[in-house]
Every structure is written in C-alpha cells, then in structure tokens.
View 1 (tube, rainbow, N blue to C red):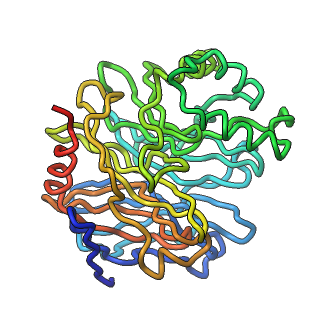
View 2 (cartoon, rainbow, N blue to C red):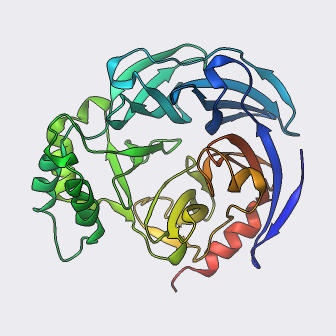
Length: 356
C-alpha cells in the first residue's frame, strides 16, 4: 500500500492508500466502498458495500490484520437484497456489538426511497433482517410535524431541503418517503438505552430508546415535532456548510465519545466530502463538548479525487492498535482506503476546542 502523509497543521494523517478495489466478480465490479468495521483483537472484519452493474448494491466481506494485509475476502455477497424495501441496494453498513449480539445498520434502497434498516447476528456470518428503523413518513407528513417544532431554534436548512424536493415534484409523491441515512449505533447502551445517530438533511440527529419495537410511526412523529431537542450537530463550518452525516461508530475514550463524521461543501468543481471529528459527553452523548473547526482529512489523492463520485472521502469505521487509529473510508465511491493517525493527538486537539 502507498503511504502518503497529509498534515493539516495540527494533526498528522498518514494515508495508507487503497485497501480494497473492485474485482471481476459480478457483484462488485463497479465499486467497493463505505465499509462497516468490527475489530476483534488484531483482526479487522470488513463489511463493505459492493456495487454491480446498474448500481445495485450488496454487502461483501473481507478480513485484514493490523498490517492491512488481506487475509480473507469472499467472492460472493455476505448480505444480499432479500426484500422489496432493499431491492436496489443494501448499502453503507456500520456494525457494533452490544452485549452478546452484533447490530448491522445499513441504508435500504428500493430504487426510490433510501431509509435506515437493521440486521442482527450472533456470529457475523448469519444475519437476520429486522426491517426499516427510520421514520416511515412521506415528505408532506414530515413537513407537517416539522412545522410544530421550535422554529426559533431550527436551522432553516431543514425547510430548505424540503423546498428543493418540492421544486422537482418529489413531495407530491406519497410513496416517496423521508430520506434518512447514515444510521450509526453507539457500541453500548447508555443508561439502559440504545443510542443511535441518523441523518435527516442537513444535520446529525440522536435518538435513544429501550427496545427496537419502540420505533413506531408515532415515535418518529413525536421525534420530528421536537426535532430541535434531538439535533446533535448541524453544519457549522465552511467545509461542512451544505450538510453532514454520521460516519464511524463512536469510540469510547476517557475524554468522551469520539465521533468521526463527514461534512459536505459545494465548490466550483462540485460537492466535496471531508472527514471530520467531534467529541461528545461520555454520560450525555447528545452534548457536544469538542469539535474541530477544520477537516480531519480531505480528498487529495487520485483515488479520492476521481472515481464513481469525485472528491469523496467517506469514513465509516475504525480500528485501534495502541495509539494508532485506523480510519476506513470510501474513496470516490470506488475504492476502500485507510488513514492512520494518533488517537492522543486527535483527542488533544479536540480538547483545545472545549469551552471552559
């Protein structure tokens, strides 16, 4: 793998290069990207999005060691498209282990709607699909409940994105449901509850619940009516001015929950996706206590600048070896790459942003 150092003045990033690329296997001949990562000692399980002709996606599987050597890679999908709600794509998985079960969240795409879904497993081999877990609301229902929200606190961009969809007629289609992606679980329950990040444009929202059965339509209607109470982060800095979204499952540290997310800005060459970092309170994860005002890293290499979608780094998983934090990311929607940095250095920089 090629090693490239990118120094953003404060944090040294070592880009390790491309880890996985498309193959001739039909299920992954158009792209591999946005992997869910689960670390087991010195081995790393990779649940990656595999794209075939026609932009149909499944989840492929590979395994590496701490030196980023590929020690296993399946030649067929691990998780396929089994239901109507995902008949065009099982995309962008994230995976955590909570107690004795693995929870894999992903984007289910039916050719029209992109919504969050869940699969569970006891062994990371056999997964049971649990269905859609995000708001089953169309856009007019969404706007109705959003208008009951505290307008003085709500970022106007929440209506801006609704209006953009209205201009192209999307909101008139009753079968077109609210797009909610980037579903990321915390790797443990907090105060006895699951904690989950999700993304309704343009920000990252947080939700807590005791049972998956609690995520009813009524639950989500109340969530949106009180959305300002559930917004974790909205766009704040220039590099994320358009929108942002959850990336890797949060990492528990002595200083708080470290989250690596993506931020998007529009430039004269189109949208650019950056990796970014923030720190959440360890006991109250809806409280942001630190946040970098600059990207953690940005597209700079050929494999990040040119691909299926240009100018994209899209972090979705991490592994920690001592102080070395490996961040696994989709590069230009075509490859999977890895960046390495010092966890201590990153936390030190985040702590500098804390308010006294």
